[in-house]
Length: 456
Image 1 (tube, rainbow, N blue to C red):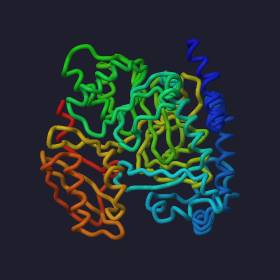
Image 2: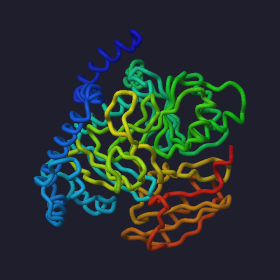
Image 3: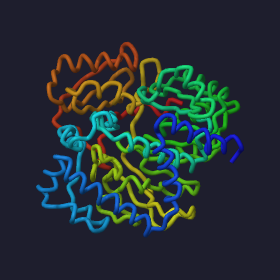
Image 4: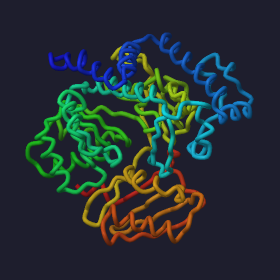
């Protein structure tokens, strides 16, 4: 660690956390740095203790869980091992949409509720809460997992992201002064891509000289294809973190070839933040097990060979507990232990979290993940939609309507949004359906395009 990094980590970062009232972030970071090397027995005790406390709290304080546990004839007292969680009911996105307020703990201070929103890759908007304390533990978990990829607090990072809501406006002077030491990020809005835009990204990156990239997996794949086709010298960071979409092995090889550095795959979601990440051994993704309990339905933890739907339990959000939440992804456990010395369980692979890009009228590429928040989440009456593109200039929308759906006004909204995001002249057609079919992996895909990945 360089002298500058040591000063930032040991002095400036903690002092800034104290100044901003976020000392819990430092406390959790110290805890997670220690517990990542805990033994299997110690880790199991941490998880079981937190799980027991969560279930007891949810049953006593959250009307939704009181009713759900009683209906399934289970009690928090029935949990004596991690395996016993399988006896408890699951939660779906539809449950959260219909019962959000009943899932919030009674008398939880309103000022302590952090509101968030996701469109998700399924096209079904979802709003939820977590506590401020959970905000700080999520931030600490992210820092720990960043460090596995060589990205520490003082380091510069280029972030190529597709959700416009995650790209903040230019910060005020006070924040820019803070960025001399902390949060040195170059934020690049990759919600839609053109050759000109990717060329501009590369010039900005060369000027900024980041140590690491963080990007949507498909964005980084397209960026690598573009730079390879252009020829010339490519800026090389020390590492690249890919997330938000499934990273195919062929795409990992391409990215590493073009940028000359290792790729660290990551799995997370807005509902619970980072779930699992690769360490420097790249043999599976270590689960953030101290804060997130992951189940692969039909499979025993630590035994590979069976893919199944993932259930996520947030062990540290008592404001609005998410217990056995069916996130809509499919995964598989990695077996054995990792050479890195961490006993944290590992996911071998993820399937069914691919969000295709859509091709705009002028050749721009628009991320389906970005559109979920930019378009669908703002119009609850749309319910759930899927966009299919199999010819240039045309979009087909499958709509499974929500409450208050009006065909004329809601399709006019989608038609206008399509032209806004993909260019004037984009044609749209619509079908109202009772159900949007799943993929073979059990996932709803928000968008499917057969046109895009051959563009560069």
